[in-house]
Image (cartoon, rainbow, N blue to C red; front, side, top):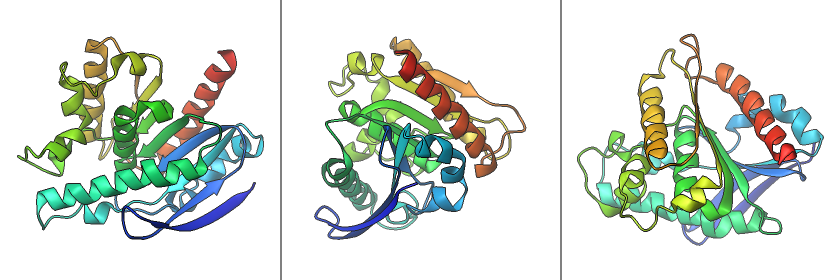
Length: 248
């Protein structure tokens, strides 16, 4: 498997940012780490290992990006607007700097992640559906109020999929575009999955109400919020998505 490490300066963040790629062929998969974690989290937790057969067969290649959650979503002090503004600078780094550097022939990516990474995957997908053909979120939480309670800041609203997708009058909700995409929202029912399961269900209901197809795949009560289950989910669902791509 071809593995490459990158460290590049971000104009948006005014710092060096790191990411890692695995493989060089097939469907591109953009990966966000879980809360406060780094670009090497999937490698450290066996996610690359379980996907290795697909990567080595040239079916997929992964781009594992870095996060700055500790400065934004996880930060408990500081001004709410500055926290979300820093998140927006990171969002713009991913969209305007990282993706153009890894994108080949205007390809569209599968975007994925676990826990907070599942939120980021959903937020990027729903805000910029032109860049992605598929959302696959594992144990995601899709409303910003959990981290920014009782705040009506426009930037916070813009980064809260449950909120902005409810708004029928929002011109940024490109429902026709979403209808042509694949949306998989996966979550367990076990330990530490209560909040994410509820949010996953609400997001699925919002999409259903708007006529947007999605697969809300809720696993059993033994399935808890951890990589032992995300490894199983990623192999199952990426495999399914590849089968659908071949069939299409």
